[in-house]
Image (tube, rainbow, N blue to C red; front, side, top):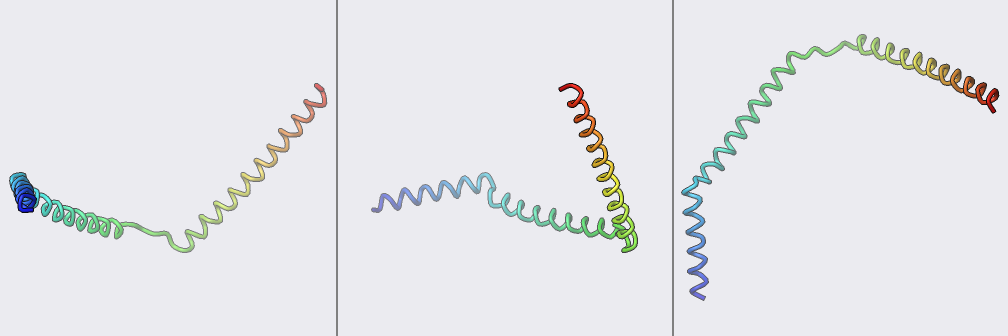
Length: 98
């Protein structure tokens, strides 16, 4: 049983030595601190950009919505009429040909 503990102690010591040699704990702490700073900077920039945004008034939203609805209805009517013309033309061609 003692040999197992000696092997475990040697492996743990080797892992600690390797992590100290490669400075993994400092890199991990640096990564956390760097990530936190970048996140704070990102949200500060988002806040600054949002202050520059101009949002439309209620009247502008209603006006553009009405324009979109009218245009959609006009295109729907046009496409329906074009479809009817194409169908009638196709049916006329079929009557003549066969």
